[in-house]
Amino acid sequence: MQSGESWVVVGLDNGGTKNNATVLDASGRFLVDALLESPSRVTEGPDVAVEALADTFDDILRRTGVARERVRAVGLDTPGPASAEGVISSKGSTNFSHPGWRSYDFRGALEKRLGLPVVYNNDGNAAALYAHYQLFGPLASQRGSISAIIGTGFGGGVIEKGQVVKGAAGMAGELGHVHIPMEGLLEPDQPLPHCNCGFDGDAESFASLTGIEKNLLPYWLKKYPGHELGKAESVSKAAKLVRAYGENGDEMALKIFAQQAKAIGRLFTIAANFTDPDAYFLGGGVVEAAPHFREWFLAKVRENAALREEQVRVSRFEMVQDLDMAGARGAAIAALERIHGR
Image (cartoon, rainbow, N blue to C red):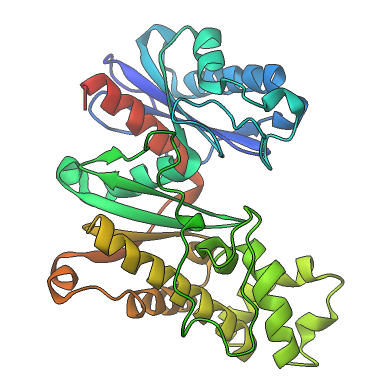
C-alpha cells in the first residue's frame, strides 16, 4: 500500500461504534482497499471521541506508510443532524446522546487537534459523493445524482456538478424527511406512518428499519395472523429478520418491501422534478442482500419512479457500492476537491 511522494488527504468516517479511515493521493487513487475500523467511543463524549479519531488518523498513516507531513487535508463525516460546518445539533442525536455533544463543533475540534484543515460532510452526503465519483469518474464534475441510503433511518445526498448540495443550514439532502404522496401507497385500512422526526408520511416512515418496526410490520402482521415473525420475542427483533424472509420469497415480507420500494420511487419522482439528476443511487441493507432480491427491489423502485420519457433516456438507477467504505472515501474526495478548489 506504499505510495509515491505526492501529497495525500485522509478520509475519516465517524460512526456510532466504529471509525473507518482511508487515504487518497493527489491523483485520486485510494491507498486502502479494505475496511479498517477502530472504536469511535462517541458515547464517552466529545473529548474522548476526538482523541479516538486522532488515533485512527495516526493508525491509517502507519498502515499505509505515509508520512504525516504529506497530508494536505482531512475529510470528516459523521451521522447527523449537524450543520454544514460540522456543529452537532443542539438537541444531540441518536449517535451523539452524551450531553457534551450538544452544539459541539466537531469539525473545528478535530482540526485543532490535528493541526490540519478538516472538511466536513454528514455520512449520507459522504456516501453519496463517493457513489457519484465512482460511477462518473472524470465526468463527475459535469453530472448530478441523488442517493437514498436506507438503514436504521433514511439518509442520502444530492450532488450537483460533483459537489454536495448542503443548503443554508446544512440540512439539504435529508431525503428521509421529504413528504411523499400517500394515495395508492397505503392500503385502505393502513394508518398513516409516523417518523421519529415528528413527521407523518415521510420517506423514512416507510423506507427504513425503524419504519418496518414502528409502522409496516405491525400492520402487515395483522393481515397475516400466525406468521412466524409474529412469534418473535419483540417487534424490534422481528423487523431485523424481515429482509431474510424477503430473500426467501415470503409473501408478507415482499409486500413490506414492495411498499418501501414504491415509497422510494415516489421520492425519486419528486427529485426528478427538482434536480433532474443523471443517476439515482440506492444504498443500505438492500445492497447487502442476495443478488436476486437486490435486483428485484431496485426494479420495483425504478418501476415506481415516474420519470418523463426524456429523463428515462439519459438517467440511470444504480446501487451504492462499497458501502462500508463509502463514508471515509467520500470524506476523502471532499477534502481532495477542496484542495483543487472545486
